[in-house]
Image 1: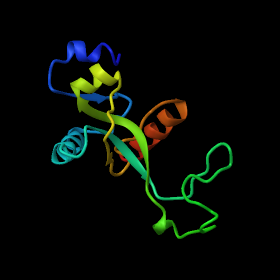
Image 2: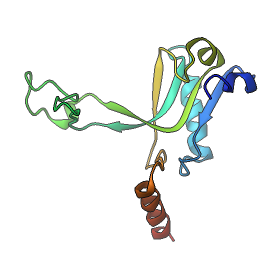
Image 3: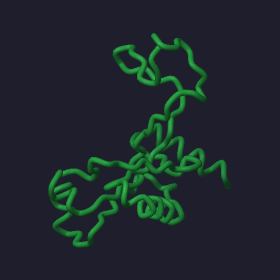
Image 4: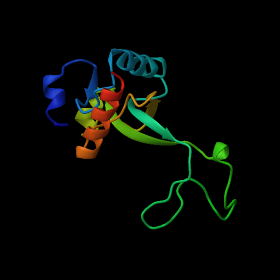
Length: 138
């Protein structure tokens, strides 16, 4: 799809979205695009993100959120933010698709999604969570 999109999308920028993010509405898209345009001189692409400001360990049991040799248990407020791609939206200049064969360039802006708006339905558990959330709002 990365190779095909710039063939059918002729605009300068390509906004890539996922239908599996049903809570990412027109207001979210407007904020996302506005944030990217406001920062266009510093960034060549952007993705919608959730932010994690907590302790994170990888599958090799190594901390990626902090260096425990410097501080075993820092305050969570002092941890650097980790940006989790939630797949609701990506935006990049068309040349990135053509030259990098990717939907993100080298200078990437994470745009934080608010209030679960970037929630991505990837499996049955996600679907059931969304369905229960939707039903509980009625």
